[in-house]
Length: 66
Image 1 (cartoon, one colour):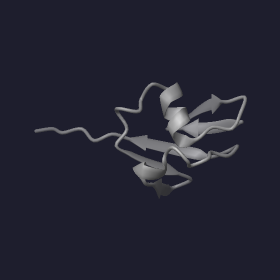
Image 2: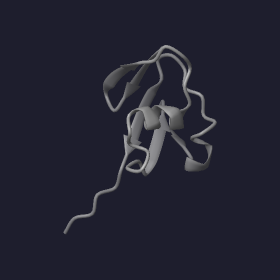
Image 3: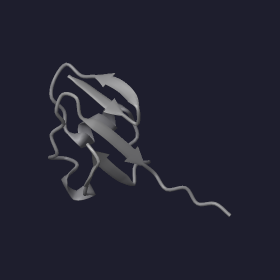
Image 4: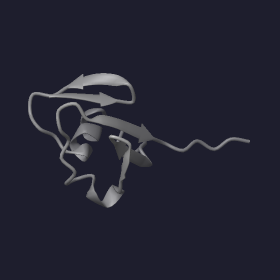
């Protein structure tokens, strides 16, 4: 299964949820917002949101500046 994450191709041998993918990338604590195919996925359903072959995932964190 191929998933595009922030423009980079990731390959998975089995189906994964959004949260499983973030755990695999070791970025769970850094992600503040997630979108799959340009649709926002609320944090309370990351664990159950099943990714599909070809999905385009954008993971965002918020950085303060000043």
